[in-house]
Image 1 (tube, rainbow, N blue to C red):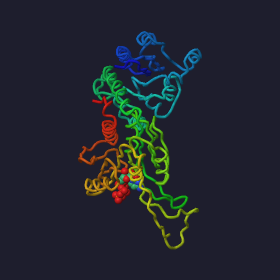
Image 2: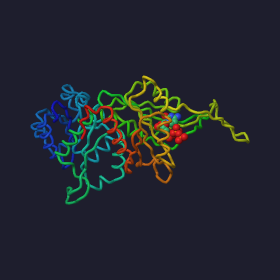
Image 3: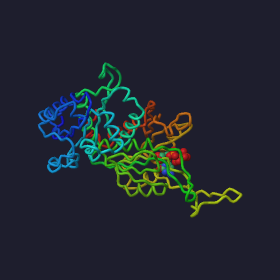
Image 4: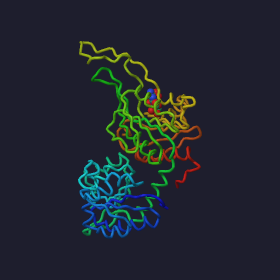
Length: 404
Ligand code: CTP
């Protein structure tokens, strides 16, 4: 049921827009209040009158209506929603969302939205598979936008392929799942570290590593999607900041530790960062010049953030999860690491160059706990994150846990 939930439905210009009329009815039947924004393109496919009649609300169209702005500004419109649903989501709106374009009310509302966003894409299969759409979608998903579909089947103009909008019932199921999921870790605080650290040698050089931050950022997104108040302490990466997450950008291991300590107390900490084990004992104040012989870089050990969190006494998070990046004897090394660091769980991953894990989209992991070792099948880093967040919710909030 969706009683009391406020859904802002953005209808954009695709032939599937007629199904959004059914979606409005299904959502209202389940008790949701549905307010609709019709894009200029959407108005070519469905009339404002039908949308208004079905939603029992005024329909919001282009932002340049002064009367509308006076009645209900675009900011209020986007902020008075528990969930924003874009159905159908055309290739055009995905591109505008990815690029932050606000050229009409629909796009402005999406740019200003504080609530989570769910998209139901619908387009021709060639548009769906175009590298531009793929890149836009990757970016939107990395920022935390959720998606249902598109489905396979017959498309407009007698073509078949992937591009059909999900059926209204499937969208309703996804919306219900969203609300169920987003309550699981509500009221709990999570801390995630992600990416590499850079340890300055001089103002232009540093010691770093190949970590992309993909896995850690995905975990922060997954915990936030379950409703946890999430802080992500991120080293330098190309990953976008996930929406709905407090992101603290740092460079060095010592900065990462300080940011983590400031975030305490939390209920769960997940240390996915590839922290540089060493830094130079002294950072040169000016660029080190070539002097005939290579400089002698004395190294010193960095603080161990995971271990520090585990030993934080009464500030120790209830659940501490570490990662073990290994290139050989993955499980055995991870078991030993779990005991040495004092964490509850270790996610062990094989980062040997042949696996393509560092920088890649997939991961093969083993979940090592005090009781067991689980071998997870190879899956995307996003799926590893979703699965891990699910385990965390089951451990921390089993009573309220309503997930299936
Ligand atoms: N870690 C940390 N601070 C450090 C080093 C590691 O918080 N200074 C955390 C990582 O985020 C990860 C876990 O410890 O969760 C294991 O990291 P890994 O690099 O695999 O282990 P190391 O302790 O560096 O051990 P080794 O390099 O000897 O395998």
